Length: 222
Image (cartoon, rainbow, N blue to C red; front, side, top):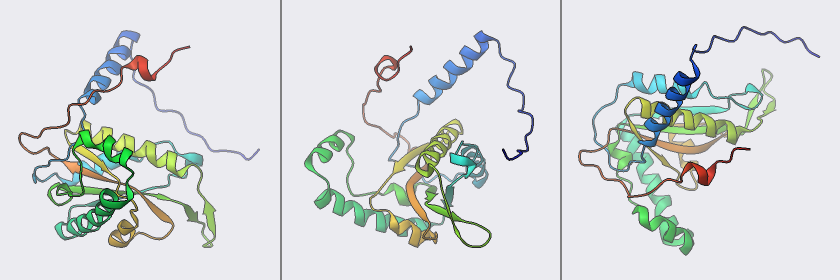
């Protein structure tokens, strides 16, 4: 077997069981306050906040440690508006022609439609891409292992980090999203995974009155 270089695992926090339970409970309670937001204030968010949250996302595990995620953080108003125009064009097709009636019925309680003003208003949009394949030093293709799963985990860490920083988010997934490659200048080996909207909720922001599943509904202990 090939020799592998290793380093010592950094020490974990020296929690007692009671302290560990409290830390887990507090984090779960904090994330329970997270809600998807579609109404944003134009209040600026410092770039450093986004940078640190992306650093957190970049700690995610990935297949064969290939780290296939690529993030493009956009605050330029003109680029955001181009994204809005392209996204709304796809959304009009979705709501007007492509979406089956059952899907539209499922979305109805959330009040979504083809108009996406938050893509202009929110101070940051983060385009999240996954590499379908990479390239070695000689320019030959290199397979990526579990890129969807890897980027999904990284996206979850990013959302949690942004929430921890006191910001709201929206996972926006117009389909297809090839326009993001064009607008953001991404290469053909990358595929758009989602567009994350980031910022402060608008004053008086309201969200749908929804309920989350209870723990017993989605978790089993054997």
